[in-house]
Image (cartoon, rainbow, N blue to C red):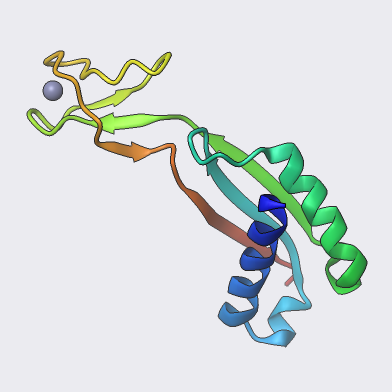
Length: 115
Ligand SMILES: [Zn+2]
């Protein structure tokens, strides 16, 4: 399953980023998931639940997923447009643009720790 490997790669990233001592104090992971990223939040939550079976140490760590909207930035006038209904057209000069600046990504936005 696609989402299982995403969860594994998120956790691997965090384990590389932080010391074990710090990881023990982690209590929440915030993700930003673009609507074009092909990631289904519900499946990601399920995969994260499944991850706990083999990694019970992370059971108390909450996963929070925020979906991000689709935005394009016009190559001609630099204007940023919120894409509605897959209409990839600049709001300002009405030229078509495929320069997506938000909505395709999946990133670890924030990690919370107990102090
Ligand atoms: Zn424009």
